[in-house]
Image (cartoon, rainbow, N blue to C red; front, side):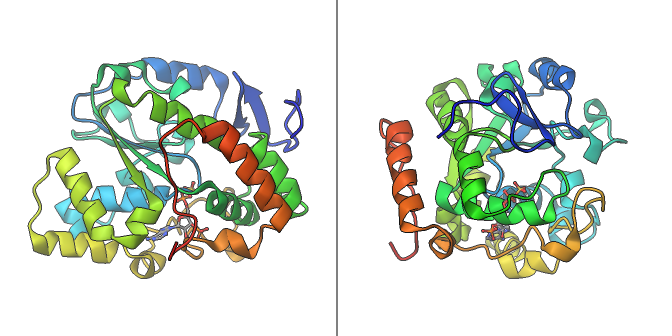
Length: 297
Ligand code: PPS
């Protein structure tokens, strides 16, 4: 792959401290200020690299934490229930300091930019990761619906941008490694998208245990049902259908695309796959992290 370029190929992005950020959505001063973001012991931070199951986990988390969401009495959408730490423009009227506890937040930030108090094991972090080949495929399609980045002319172009970290949140390898290798510094639960696909109920129970929230079996049934791909696809509160029109072009697709494991096989060439495997081995080979690349394996 090419050396880091002074300006990212996508003119909507800029480099800051080795990472690519979206020009219109987040400024360097704000990124830096997040280091001092005051957190509470009972805050919960959902952390993901893009296209790894964010919207899904936001839905699960808010269903677990809010009875009103489970029984449909609270008509609040996902981005308001679990607001973005870095994309303040999506929640301009909300003062995070005034939100009642327990506060839920979501972020795609690398651990380098995360609030420093998290490292004292204050608050809880849930990190959801997905096999990076499916992340690439999902991210490539997302370029068609987001108005915040330029569309790649073809998959090879996107593939190279992705490997060079020229997408929001930077290199997948750095993101996962960063959070994973510092795991002992955080109060953190790691989940994998593919495990959630295989057994969502177990994942929901794991999250409940981690958050020390007791839900009866009936409530768990509701969480699992309302977090299924089928239900979320038609639930405007959960599927981000109400995102501002200057950010998302709904005519071109949705956040709920396929929700499958192994879809990368429908786009990656043998050569791209071999290139990826080689880089994956170099970058991640020393970590005890296994991914499910397709189901059944
Ligand atoms: S984003 O833009 O970073 O917030 O995107 P993110 O939500 O992380 O990832 C979007 C992908 O997650 C899939 N998705 C789901 N899969 C299974 N079950 C449920 N309920 C679900 N909800 C969202 C979504 O379809 C995107 O994956 P792809 O492969 O593109 O379908």
